[in-house]
Image 1: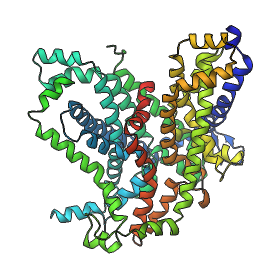
Image 2: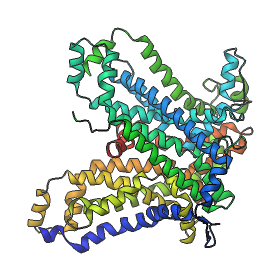
Image 3: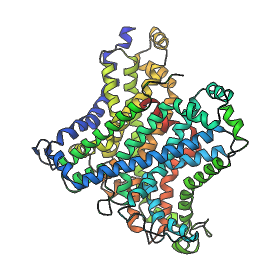
Image 4: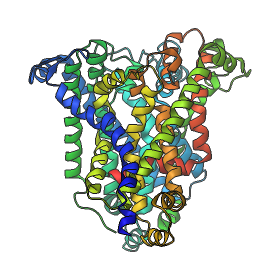
Length: 293
Length: 281
C-alpha cells in the first residue's frame, strides 16, 4: 500500500504540470510586482534600483489620492447596497410562500452571468445624456432632472458604482440564501415559541448564525470594490479628468499607457496591502470564532 | 424555515412589493437590450423607447453577425473558454489527487503553496504577467489568454477537488491496490467517476469565468482577429449613434451562451459561482 500511494513517478506526473504553470504564471509575477516596485523600469530594459522612491512619488501624486478615495467610496457603496438588498431579498425568498419564487430568484441572479462589457455598454446607453433610458424615464414621469450622468466629475463614480452593485447583487443574494438555508430550523422554532417576532428572530438569531457567510460577502465586496477596474475602463476611461481613477486603473495607465512599469508595480503593491488590511479588519470584527451548529 | 413560511402568508405587502420591484430593476435593462436589438434607431429613440418592438427587425442580428466581426469574437471566446476549461480541469484534478491521496513529504506545503494564489487579485500581477507573455512570445496568440487563464483557475479548482478527494474513504484505494490496479488505473477508473459532481461544477465555474474575463484580455490581446467577445464589444462605444439595433444584437449574441446555461442549470450555476464561500470564508 505504501509503495502504491508513494509512487514517486506518479506523484511527479500528477503534480509537476500544475506546479510549473502556477509558479511561472502566478507566483513568479507576485514576487516580481513587489520587486519591480523598487525599480525605475520601462518594461524593456533592466531598470535601475531606486528603493522606495516610487512609493514616495505615489504618496505625493494627487491622482493616487483620488484613486484610493474612489476605491474606498466604490467599495463602500457596493458593499452596503449589495449586502443590504441581498439580505432583504434572501430572507424574503426563504420564507417560501411567495408566488413566482423561481422566477424571482433567476431574475436576481441573471446579471451575474453576463459579461462586464455587456453590462457596462448597456448602462452606458441607459445613462446616455441624449438618448438614454434614465433621462427618458424622468421625461415620462414629468420630472425635470435630465443630465449626462457620467460626464460630471462628482456623480460619475456613483453612477459607475451603481452599475457594479446592480450586476453583482445577485451573487450576494445566492450566497446569503444558501446561508439562510444552512441555519437549522429548530433555532427559529425556539425563537417562535419564545414569542419573538420574525424581525427579531432574523436580527438576533439568523444574522449572527450567518456570520461566516456575511464575512465572506464583506471580504468579496470590499476587495472587489478596491480592485475595481473594468467598470471604469469601459464606462469612463477614468474620466472626466481623473475623477474615476482607481488604484488598478492608475496602475494600468502608468504601466501600459505611460510606460512607467515600476511606478505601476508600486501602485499594485499598495493594492495588495489595502486588500490584506481590509480582509484582516473584517476577519477581526466579524465571526472571530468559528460558529458551530 | 417552516415558521417563516406560515407567518408570511398573512401580511408583508411591502416586502413582496420590494421583491417584485427589484426583479423588474434587475431584468428590465436586459429586456430593454433585447427589445432594442430588434428595433431601428427611430423606434429606439423616438417612437417606442421602452416597449416591445412593433416590428421585429431580425436584420439587426444579420448585420451584427456580418458587419461587426461578431463571429470572429464568438469563435475566439469559444476556443479560449474551451481550452481553459480542459487545461485547468486536467491539471487541477491531477494535482489535487496527488495532494489529497498520495503519500509524499511535501504535499502539505505544495497544497498551501497553490492555495496562496486564491487570495491574490489578478490585478496585482498584471504588469509582470504582460511582460512574461511577451517574453514567451505568446503575445497576440491564443496562448496569451489560455495559459494565464489556466494558471489563474488552478488554485481555486484544486482546492475544491482537494476537498472532494479528502472525503473519499481509504478502503477504495486499498481494494484497488489488492486487485492489482495501477495508481493511474485507480485514478481514472475509480477516483474520477466519484468526483463527477465536482467536475461538473468546476466546468461551469471555469467556463463562465473565462467566457466573461475582461481585465487580462484587455492587456494581453490587441490583435483584432484574436479578440474575445468582452473585448470585441468595446468597439461599439464609438458606434453609438449610428446603429444601436446592431449593437443590441451583438450584445444579446454575446450573452446568449451564459444566459442559456444559467436558464437550463440555474441551481448548478449558482452553486458553481458561490462554491467559493465555502472554501474561502
